[in-house]
Image 1: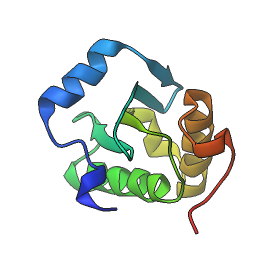
Image 2: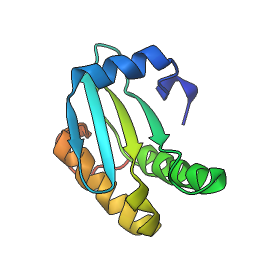
Image 3: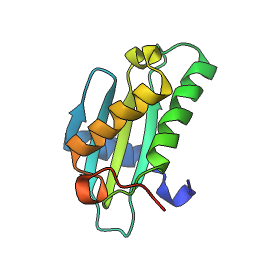
Length: 116
């Protein structure tokens, strides 16, 4: 995923959190904000209570892989990974995130569309 799709500044993440447009479940919380830009941007965060650094990095890599697979509307979104994710396999994580994206209405067409 190209760097232009990342939210890089801490202040931008804080602004997203202040809007309080959230969708969540037992495993993830997704904060979102509508954009006027030409493409979406995202950030991923894991609490320090989630295992050690390699486990947190693995969880973030898995979420980034799922994010790469779909097309999104022009939104900024911030995914917070909860500590309960540790019990999920990659396929289960993929299903939970897809369901969350659909509930947040950020997928293009709102369906299971994949990039070609």
